[in-house]
Image 1 (tube, rainbow, N blue to C red):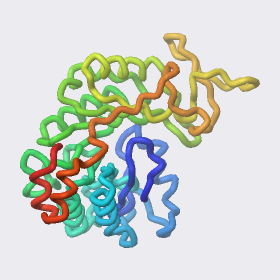
Image 2 (image 1 turned 180 degrees about the vertical axis):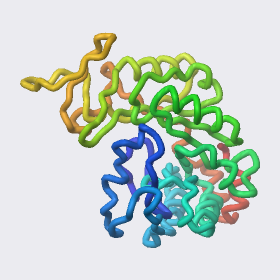
Image 3 (image 1 turned 120 degrees about the vertical axis):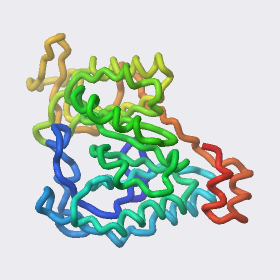
Image 4 (image 1 turned 90 degrees about the vertical axis):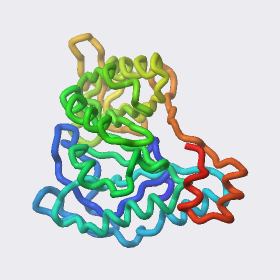
Length: 295
């Protein structure tokens, strides 16, 4: 999807669609909720087959051409409707080969590879991964302390030019202090959809403050369907043991992403190509260009 509505990316790209819930953070999965898409319905879960999406197969090439023309870099989230490290048998090897080929051929795009399955990194990363592709930020989701302890060490054991965390939906307190130093980016957000679990504002503040001390880019995406702002004539609320109160509105857009009166939208990526890089792009193929680009 060009011009994604997801706050931390520019575009989303889905080479295939479908997944299986594997942890508490998956409970209210927006992708499964929206599995009736313009491409038809895809069956979720271990018994459903992943479905290739051919209509957008080459969109990243178009976005790369736009970056070369305008000098403005874009971030691409792959994949918002799937997990490219999913080991489901219906995923054909050539689908994943296409992903790696597309990333190599678009060095002016910053790719965001987000997974709940870091145990599969070694199995599915390409043979030429080495210390990581220069234009890839490898990321894991950590929704609470249990899954932070399971997934972050596996992430940090995997070579990458950048490591990132999506702490979303944040459904419990998470102490990132033992891992924060090598982390390049932290995203935090609350849950949406019916039945959304409330997020304690203090959980968000603790992560924000830790990132600030360690100078780690921090992006607060959304409150979700609960907000710390009082809602007139609305009685549904949740009080946490530390006496923090949140109110249910059921509207992510209205609840927004203001945290203590400020927006937090930091990221570690360059916004633009240099004029030299744009000139080089006219004479070099993507593989040659990649070696000249500044991370």
